[in-house]
Image 1 (cartoon, rainbow, N blue to C red):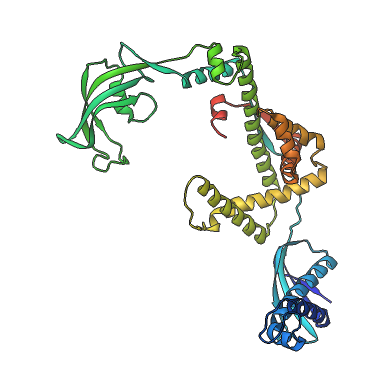
Image 2 (image 1 turned 135 degrees about the vertical axis):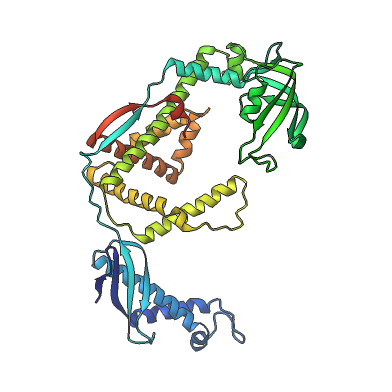
Length: 433
């Protein structure tokens, strides 16, 4: 017999007992298995008497058998009482004599909450949209050309984006400070390598000119001697090189991967890649909005054990990411509290999604999964290999199924809520992954 107490909203305590007879047979089987390989002085393996095995390994065998019996008893009781257990139970053996005819125990654990979906029809959602324009494609082509520009000597005043070579001397209270002097120092204007005031002084100068000016270093400047202080710089301009863009021709097209040099193919490929990336980013942004709406209208307690697991997983992933970036973790463990908020949100969303999918039959369809893989594969040189790579692994296929499922949930949320469209700004949308 067993009984269940309600400790808190999600915490339960199961009280039950295990007959000793359920353990005895398991102990004997474990001792027999141990005896096949055990090494005890004076006996050959496999020939050790049961009494000797009991003396050496009896406590271990009984502890292991009791542990299995507890787990088995708990699972049977949970099933009998229709308990949806979240996480692992914490056992407390009440009987002092573990050889007693019956061993009483309690198991404290959490159960999954009842998820009652909130009403989405009253929620207002702003869906981000964007229509790719010819200007976007042209600007991207221009950026590619700019990235492949070469610098040529220019007989004019220095401008933003030029490469210049300067001599400079910086003085604090009439004395050259550390790092304040250089000869033939290269600077590309407009990329932010130098302080804005320093670059601004160079713009408009011509080769052979010298200029003196005062400027104040930022208070948080890394050079503590001059941080927050006014200094005097003298600059001599030695060389000016202007960027020269490559022609938009066959040679340029080949340099960026178009084998036959067809410029129209280059433009078409850029358009396709931009559209694919835009679609991806719009999906991410609108998914976040939809999920936040679900979280807002659906309130329930979350099992602490699941949040702890998720926090641990997030912490381990963060450490792995740090190591991949070249940082030495040295077995570092970050405080789990740092990940609690994110973990709670992820656990809660997981439970909500499961309920939405089941209640509204939003499971991923095979054709959806195939379409997602096919679309993703198009960004590679050999799409068929990518498709086969996914098909060869159940786990990878499951990941894509989860993406399709999320898309179905987002579509459902959008169909229920009051949705207004808001066009994004191209640069802002593409500036965030």
